[in-house]
Image (tube, rainbow, N blue to C red):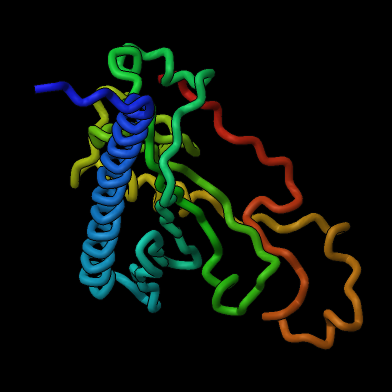
Length: 233
Protein backbone atom coordinates (compact mmCIF):
# COMPACT_ATOMS: atom_id res chain seq x y z
CA UNK A 1 0.00 0.00 0.00
CA UNK A 2 1.40 3.37 -1.01
CA UNK A 3 2.16 5.62 1.93
CA UNK A 4 0.27 8.90 1.82
CA UNK A 5 2.71 11.83 1.42
CA UNK A 6 3.16 13.97 4.51
CA UNK A 7 1.60 17.41 4.40
CA UNK A 8 4.19 20.23 4.39
CA UNK A 9 2.14 21.79 7.18
CA UNK A 10 1.89 18.71 9.39
CA UNK A 11 4.73 19.79 11.70
CA UNK A 12 3.16 23.23 12.08
CA UNK A 13 -0.24 21.74 12.87
CA UNK A 14 1.25 19.31 15.39
CA UNK A 15 3.11 22.13 17.16
CA UNK A 16 -0.09 24.21 17.25
CA UNK A 17 -2.05 21.33 18.76
CA UNK A 18 0.64 20.56 21.35
CA UNK A 19 0.99 24.19 22.45
CA UNK A 20 -2.77 24.74 22.62
CA UNK A 21 -3.29 21.49 24.54
CA UNK A 22 -0.61 22.44 27.06
CA UNK A 23 -2.16 25.88 27.61
CA UNK A 24 -5.59 24.30 28.03
CA UNK A 25 -4.08 22.02 30.66
CA UNK A 26 -2.70 25.04 32.51
CA UNK A 27 -6.06 26.84 32.21
CA UNK A 28 -7.91 23.84 33.66
CA UNK A 29 -5.46 23.61 36.58
CA UNK A 30 -5.85 27.35 37.28
CA UNK A 31 -9.64 27.16 37.05
CA UNK A 32 -9.68 24.27 39.54
CA UNK A 33 -7.48 26.30 41.88
CA UNK A 34 -9.71 29.36 41.52
CA UNK A 35 -12.77 27.25 42.32
CA UNK A 36 -10.99 26.08 45.46
CA UNK A 37 -10.20 29.69 46.45
CA UNK A 38 -13.92 30.46 46.07
CA UNK A 39 -15.00 27.44 48.12
CA UNK A 40 -12.52 28.03 50.96
CA UNK A 41 -13.44 31.75 51.10
CA UNK A 42 -17.12 30.84 51.43
CA UNK A 43 -16.39 28.33 54.17
CA UNK A 44 -14.20 30.87 55.98
CA UNK A 45 -17.01 33.45 55.88
CA UNK A 46 -19.47 30.93 57.35
CA UNK A 47 -17.04 29.94 60.10
CA UNK A 48 -16.40 33.62 60.88
CA UNK A 49 -20.14 34.31 61.17
CA UNK A 50 -20.57 31.51 63.71
CA UNK A 51 -17.63 32.77 65.79
CA UNK A 52 -18.56 36.46 65.47
CA UNK A 53 -21.96 35.94 67.07
CA UNK A 54 -20.21 35.00 70.30
CA UNK A 55 -17.74 37.89 70.42
CA UNK A 56 -18.89 40.88 68.36
CA UNK A 57 -20.22 44.04 69.96
CA UNK A 58 -20.98 45.56 66.53
CA UNK A 59 -22.14 44.03 63.28
CA UNK A 60 -18.90 43.33 61.38
CA UNK A 61 -19.78 40.68 58.78
CA UNK A 62 -17.51 38.65 56.53
CA UNK A 63 -19.14 37.88 53.19
CA UNK A 64 -18.07 36.06 50.05
CA UNK A 65 -19.78 37.14 46.84
CA UNK A 66 -19.37 35.77 43.31
CA UNK A 67 -19.14 38.25 40.43
CA UNK A 68 -18.94 35.86 37.49
CA UNK A 69 -16.76 33.03 36.26
CA UNK A 70 -13.43 34.73 36.91
CA UNK A 71 -14.08 36.97 39.90
CA UNK A 72 -15.29 36.88 43.49
CA UNK A 73 -14.86 39.08 46.54
CA UNK A 74 -14.39 38.56 50.26
CA UNK A 75 -15.61 41.48 52.37
CA UNK A 76 -14.66 41.93 56.03
CA UNK A 77 -14.63 45.02 58.22
CA UNK A 78 -13.84 48.06 56.10
CA UNK A 79 -12.05 46.08 53.41
CA UNK A 80 -12.76 43.95 50.37
CA UNK A 81 -10.41 41.45 48.76
CA UNK A 82 -11.10 40.80 45.09
CA UNK A 83 -9.83 37.53 43.61
CA UNK A 84 -9.56 37.69 39.81
CA UNK A 85 -8.49 34.83 37.56
CA UNK A 86 -7.04 35.90 34.22
CA UNK A 87 -8.50 33.97 31.28
CA UNK A 88 -5.14 33.82 29.45
CA UNK A 89 -1.99 31.79 30.08
CA UNK A 90 1.40 33.46 30.52
CA UNK A 91 5.01 32.34 30.31
CA UNK A 92 7.27 33.41 33.17
CA UNK A 93 9.87 35.95 31.88
CA UNK A 94 13.33 34.54 31.20
CA UNK A 95 15.00 36.90 33.70
CA UNK A 96 12.70 35.87 36.57
CA UNK A 97 14.36 34.09 39.51
CA UNK A 98 12.06 31.08 39.11
CA UNK A 99 13.46 30.40 35.63
CA UNK A 100 16.82 29.52 37.18
CA UNK A 101 15.35 26.65 39.21
CA UNK A 102 15.98 23.03 38.25
CA UNK A 103 12.22 22.48 38.44
CA UNK A 104 11.75 24.63 35.33
CA UNK A 105 14.89 23.38 33.58
CA UNK A 106 13.60 19.80 33.82
CA UNK A 107 10.45 20.73 31.89
CA UNK A 108 10.09 24.13 30.23
CA UNK A 109 6.30 23.74 30.01
CA UNK A 110 6.24 24.21 33.77
CA UNK A 111 7.02 27.89 33.18
CA UNK A 112 3.58 28.47 31.64
CA UNK A 113 1.16 29.70 34.27
CA UNK A 114 -2.34 30.93 34.90
CA UNK A 115 -2.68 33.90 37.27
CA UNK A 116 -5.02 34.72 40.15
CA UNK A 117 -4.74 38.35 41.28
CA UNK A 118 -5.66 39.48 44.81
CA UNK A 119 -6.63 43.17 45.14
CA UNK A 120 -7.48 45.10 48.29
CA UNK A 121 -10.08 47.91 48.19
CA UNK A 122 -11.92 49.87 50.84
CA UNK A 123 -15.51 48.66 51.14
CA UNK A 124 -16.75 52.26 51.40
CA UNK A 125 -15.33 52.92 47.92
CA UNK A 126 -18.08 50.67 46.53
CA UNK A 127 -20.74 51.50 49.11
CA UNK A 128 -20.54 55.23 48.32
CA UNK A 129 -19.60 54.84 44.65
CA UNK A 130 -16.27 56.68 45.06
CA UNK A 131 -14.97 55.96 41.58
CA UNK A 132 -11.68 57.82 42.13
CA UNK A 133 -10.59 55.57 45.00
CA UNK A 134 -7.66 53.21 44.59
CA UNK A 135 -7.14 49.52 45.14
CA UNK A 136 -3.85 47.70 45.65
CA UNK A 137 -2.53 44.46 44.23
CA UNK A 138 -1.31 42.68 47.36
CA UNK A 139 -0.42 39.44 45.64
CA UNK A 140 -0.76 37.23 42.58
CA UNK A 141 -0.72 33.45 42.51
CA UNK A 142 0.92 31.81 39.47
CA UNK A 143 -0.16 28.21 38.82
CA UNK A 144 1.22 25.76 36.27
CA UNK A 145 -0.16 22.60 34.63
CA UNK A 146 0.85 20.45 37.63
CA UNK A 147 -0.97 22.80 40.04
CA UNK A 148 2.35 23.90 41.47
CA UNK A 149 2.36 27.57 42.38
CA UNK A 150 4.39 30.48 43.64
CA UNK A 151 3.29 33.91 44.81
CA UNK A 152 4.55 37.40 44.07
CA UNK A 153 3.29 39.83 46.66
CA UNK A 154 3.46 41.69 49.91
CA UNK A 155 4.88 40.48 53.23
CA UNK A 156 3.40 37.11 54.25
CA UNK A 157 2.09 36.46 50.75
CA UNK A 158 5.39 37.00 48.97
CA UNK A 159 7.73 35.52 51.53
CA UNK A 160 5.97 32.33 52.60
CA UNK A 161 5.11 30.80 49.24
CA UNK A 162 8.17 30.83 47.01
CA UNK A 163 9.14 27.20 46.50
CA UNK A 164 7.73 26.36 43.07
CA UNK A 165 8.77 22.70 43.12
CA UNK A 166 7.17 21.83 46.45
CA UNK A 167 4.24 24.28 46.67
CA UNK A 168 1.08 22.58 45.40
CA UNK A 169 -2.49 23.88 45.40
CA UNK A 170 -4.45 22.01 48.10
CA UNK A 171 -7.25 22.90 50.50
CA UNK A 172 -4.66 23.61 53.18
CA UNK A 173 -2.40 25.77 51.00
CA UNK A 174 -5.33 27.83 49.68
CA UNK A 175 -6.59 28.36 53.24
CA UNK A 176 -3.15 29.61 54.24
CA UNK A 177 -2.97 32.00 51.26
CA UNK A 178 -6.38 33.51 51.98
CA UNK A 179 -5.56 33.77 55.70
CA UNK A 180 -2.27 35.55 54.90
CA UNK A 181 -4.10 37.95 52.54
CA UNK A 182 -6.64 38.83 55.24
CA UNK A 183 -3.95 39.24 57.89
CA UNK A 184 -1.92 41.54 55.61
CA UNK A 185 -5.04 43.58 54.75
CA UNK A 186 -5.94 44.05 58.42
CA UNK A 187 -2.46 45.42 59.10
CA UNK A 188 -2.44 47.58 55.97
CA UNK A 189 -4.11 50.68 57.45
CA UNK A 190 -5.59 53.78 55.88
CA UNK A 191 -3.26 56.76 56.39
CA UNK A 192 -4.30 60.41 56.55
CA UNK A 193 -3.61 62.10 53.16
CA UNK A 194 -1.14 65.02 53.17
CA UNK A 195 -2.74 68.35 54.14
CA UNK A 196 -1.49 70.06 50.96
CA UNK A 197 -3.33 67.51 48.85
CA UNK A 198 -6.79 68.20 50.32
CA UNK A 199 -6.66 71.87 51.37
CA UNK A 200 -8.46 73.09 48.24
CA UNK A 201 -11.94 72.09 47.14
CA UNK A 202 -14.12 73.32 44.29
CA UNK A 203 -17.69 74.63 44.61
CA UNK A 204 -18.87 71.68 42.50
CA UNK A 205 -17.21 69.20 44.84
CA UNK A 206 -18.67 70.92 47.89
CA UNK A 207 -22.18 70.85 46.41
CA UNK A 208 -21.98 67.12 45.83
CA UNK A 209 -22.42 64.52 48.53
CA UNK A 210 -19.45 62.74 50.06
CA UNK A 211 -20.21 59.70 47.91
CA UNK A 212 -19.49 61.58 44.68
CA UNK A 213 -16.73 63.96 45.78
CA UNK A 214 -13.53 63.80 43.78
CA UNK A 215 -11.32 63.12 46.81
CA UNK A 216 -9.33 60.04 45.97
CA UNK A 217 -8.93 57.65 48.89
CA UNK A 218 -6.36 54.90 49.17
CA UNK A 219 -4.45 53.27 51.99
CA UNK A 220 -1.09 54.79 51.01
CA UNK A 221 -2.16 57.64 48.74
CA UNK A 222 0.20 60.60 48.91
CA UNK A 223 2.97 58.68 50.65
CA UNK A 224 5.98 57.02 49.08
CA UNK A 225 5.17 53.33 48.95
CA UNK A 226 7.76 50.67 48.17
CA UNK A 227 6.95 47.05 47.35
CA UNK A 228 8.35 44.47 49.72
CA UNK A 229 11.64 42.92 48.67
CA UNK A 230 11.06 39.93 46.40
CA UNK A 231 12.57 36.66 47.58
CA UNK A 232 14.51 34.43 45.23
CA UNK A 233 12.92 31.10 44.30
